[in-house]
Length: 173
Image 1: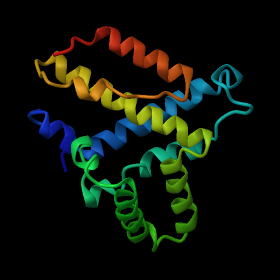
Image 2: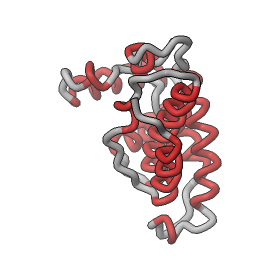
Image 3: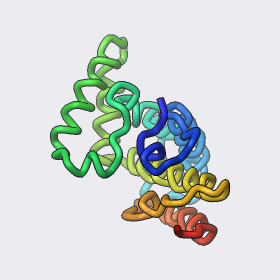
Image 4: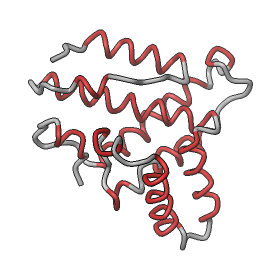
């Protein structure tokens, strides 16, 4: 299933939700290890739980496999509560039969609320993967991708630095 935001931007052969999730999981794993080389420098009191980061990255957009990924312009017309309730119901349906369902449901809640350092890293990585993808599409001539670069708030200095580096390569338009 292709990511809707890219389709609405006119991207042919847009990345799928599965492609995005894989990219987020791999990048989150590597960045968690980077953060753990200097947790204090990243604003943490202790190292990240790399397994939790990886699990969060793998399930962060699981609801989108059923609901689709609602583009910003559609999500803006819904209340956050409506979107959250729909995603929560889907996550419960998808994960509910697993033996460790309560653990995964709690991880997903942590992601949504950005309530743990691990969840906050995955939030950052989710946005980094998106802007890196926008840069790849731009390099092949795609235009009208400015919206994907806007409105990010970074939890980790490392992620802000990576974003700034990507932004330095970006040609708006």
